[in-house]
Length: 161
Image 1 (cartoon, rainbow, N blue to C red):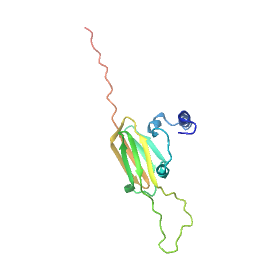
Image 2 (tube, helix red, strand yellow; image 1 turned 90 degrees about the vertical axis):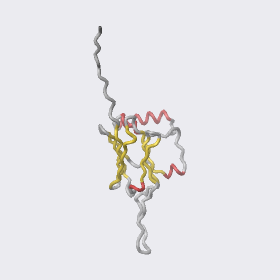
Image 3 (spheres, rainbow, N blue to C red; image 1 turned 90 degrees about the horizontal axis):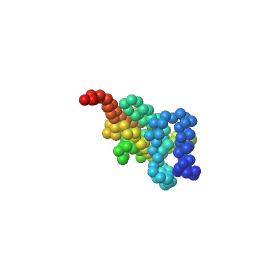
Image 4 (tube, rainbow, N blue to C red; image 1 turned 120 degrees about the vertical axis):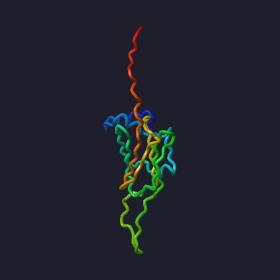
């Protein structure tokens, strides 16, 4: 919750969506944990600001996340509560130690991820049992298939006797 309250957050979200011309469907992926945000040691250590691109195609949703330095064995992709896609990692990128004694870093600019946690609320047409993921060249790609659309009802003309 912002210091201005929940109603301001809604107005701000709407203004940002309008400003950047985000489609209304993007909001279906926004996940806001219920209630207020509490700052604890655990939430401070979790990196939830890993950027993600979400692409909707006619048959699926594609999530692309940059996760440099993490291998596929460091990452866990799950679905919780039937409609929440969760990507997490407790893995840590290792710093390269100098082979010779007396080696030291002169500069450390690359941020080392402590923990990764991102949650996405899936839309109703997402097939939570048909999700695949792959990690390649520092990019995690998660593919969520869509359920086929329901058959369109046919109009049947009934003869009046």
